[in-house]
Length: 83
Image 1 (cartoon, rainbow, N blue to C red):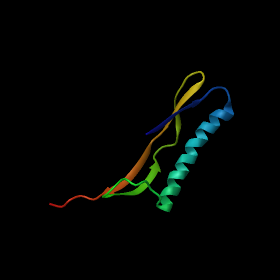
Image 2 (cartoon, rainbow, N blue to C red):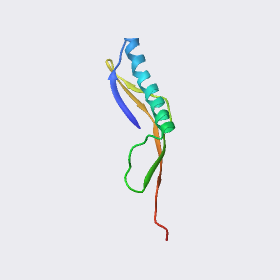
Image 3 (spheres, rainbow, N blue to C red):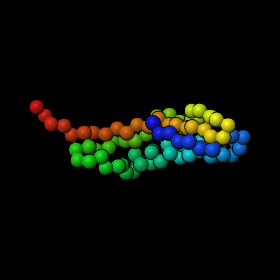
């Protein structure tokens, strides 16, 4: 889960920009998966994909601030020991 707090209120353009950020993040995850450009999780772990599992959405709103979130997933392989 990735969460953020941003300005929120009657300014429709600001609210749209907040939503656009999460759309861009989702596209960035897809691009990184396509390019196989993943974070290093250390020895024995190999990332397979990263993705957004939901669209970014407004979770709660106060008069001048909104809390947004998006659910994300990273799939990785972890080398184990055989018995």
